[in-house]
Length: 413
Image 1 (spheres, rainbow, N blue to C red):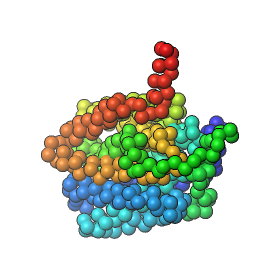
Image 2: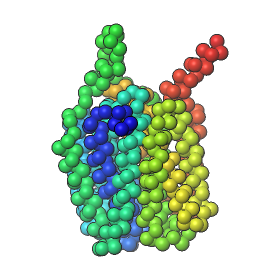
Image 3: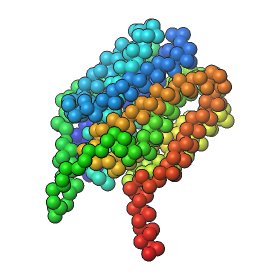
Image 4: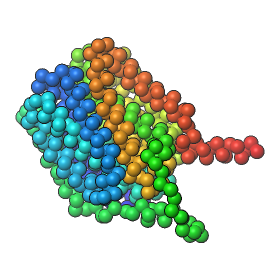
């Protein structure tokens, strides 16, 4: 099979399998959380504030995640985070006070970023130099499969019992993912080994290089960080408030809104891998810019669409574009920094993802309540427009763009 030839390391495939199982649990919880909290009597502002607690958990752990990986290994942190997430999602529906829900959402975010940073560090370290977007796109496909299946399973379970059963089932499923990772993953691949693999046989051993500061590392990956900030902002805001907007402004029933994450994941599932191949071929940042432009148009479309089938198509296209930016931005980071910096780079990257999730829901909730759902969608589209402009200004951060400029200069000489 062509995919197995391009991705030969069995540990990469094991990460994919664990990710599919975990993402089923994510999809179940995400499709239920806004409806569950609304049924409990929480306001839009409360729901946004709880999402802020989730983002704070991501920020708190992502700031130290690189140190934890160096101390306990990416594999060890991945397994521990699987089990931690399972516990938090299973406990969530049995808490009633805002304070207790905020605490559990904080730890939910912390364990989630532990999973993301650990898995991404392992995948980047085991992906080939010209194969990173392809490898990360399959990781996104694995997520998409789970996110697509999760809402359907949640819908079926809620027909049999209360909404809480969906969260408990998500905890059980996450536990299985953790057990699989514990018993199948090999020890981490040394970054020193990765560095030696990219040296040519006739090269002398590389001398120790100065370790980049966090600021220098951030500057190298600033386009990836802006992209993941925008995606975190958009994802955390849309998953909470788009269903409520469709119910209140478009007359869509609650049962139909449960399927929104599934349609978004379907677009991601169908297009992420081809987009990854395109990114490896023409340049990651150029690909991200095109995806953001199309996705921004789809977000604006919800203001004017009234047909549920057309909305579903728009959601699929939004998933195909905006969700596909994430693996390509990780691949851009992977070709922009040294292998020994992957752990620190993915930690910084996920900090910006967390900041987006932290800021987005609260700001979006305030705009929704004060100015209405249409203005909420306009501001989300403007965010992606800001990324497009930023990527045009710093287009040379992509090694592919620098290579094209060099070829162009040589052809004119």
